[in-house]
Length: 575
Image 1 (cartoon, one colour):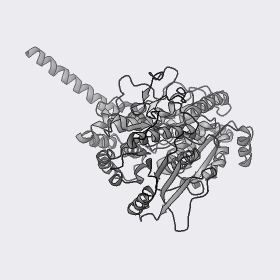
Image 2 (cartoon, one colour; image 1 turned 180 degrees about the vertical axis):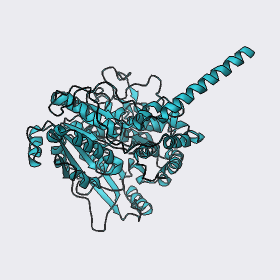
Image 3 (cartoon, helix red, strand yellow; image 1 turned 45 degrees about the vertical axis):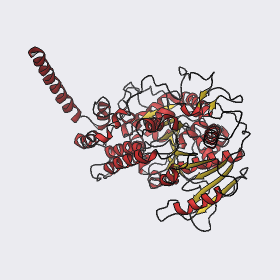
Image 4 (tube, one colour; image 1 turned 90 degrees about the vertical axis):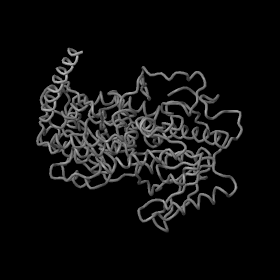
């Protein structure tokens, strides 16, 4: 016993020495290397943030867009995102010592034998030749092939959404609401939209083909939210006039949980939860400059996660818009699996499609020369948390350090925000097109060789990825779980990077080295995947089946078919 104890003490001392050496080594690492080193830390794992950047040599510069050799080091310039190790330790210590958030580590551990939910060639979903329960289906419903023909039964659906898009300009949540519910209305369902009017005279525009779409407008609160007492009164009035609602759908917390808790035929779609936001806060703090004060967001966000865990269970059914969120809802928020359903966002495939003529016209409109070697595009809100400070600095260093890139590579920016003016003043080859309507945005995507979204927001799933992929464009994005788990699942359709200047520069050089032919093939693969999984039709038919299932289960209406089972006679195979 004495020998065993002595040996254990020696091992502990050796382990302590090793730990000290590792800490000493980490303290000297720059941020990008520090993030990789922390990936193996037993204290806490944030895998989508700290996934290792490939250390393989860069592709040969045979492409005309760069004169660099494949192994030439990328000039780093001044790393404005450099921070001390102690600063990062502050975060990790604060998170890891709170026992109430121990799940921040455990929820990120890979589930044993967990398949790729969207699947490559090696993935199979067992049991699809036999009937399965949809409410227990763990993968994304986009993988299933529901009939594109409208069902025999037409539903009366109530939608609660904070805002309805005005003149085609909206954020991701509002665009999701409009795309989904217009598709459902066009499939014959009766839609009632409970939303806020921006002013007393405003009214949503007309939507061709969606004749059974009715809006119930109320003035928003001073904070911009739906006026819950007024909207609840409107809902009850419509629900009691003739036919009651078959199903109620709320986009995030448009309908507060206090009123939703007694509605059994309700589904909520989550477009961002506080747990994911903590990840975003950590990333943004790591990237802030030494002069920029730290925001006291982490402690507030931890309290928000706990609050959400406490009230999320009051909603009857939950729709996760990415595979990662579905996993978090089950394992962190403790929502029973049969009440969590993964339906990834979709976009209108009739608008976003491959059209090289349209893309060529868009390039001419913005005077991009025909011999340009590469056209990179960005779209959306040009704000800090979408990663534009980091992207701006990466482009600035790339074009300052390589005149060939500055002459041959062009950047198209669609959108508006504080960083719009900065991009305009960067270099002549960076062109800001401003905010675009959907049809214009479709032409924008068709003009690109590659699309990049440098977002620092880990929450939700950005529609711009899906729009670009449907347009046949390969995509580049931040290595967050929601992105690499649902969209850029492998290198065949795009590129993932850590949100640092160095990593973005490396990704751009890699794109240049691979050349247009490789990009074209990646674009084809991206479009093929998007057509299988990310169309408005795919999304709408999945939600339609969920709504039919919920209505049948809660209201007990009789039908020879069980809408909670798959496949039904008219259903097809997996995507």
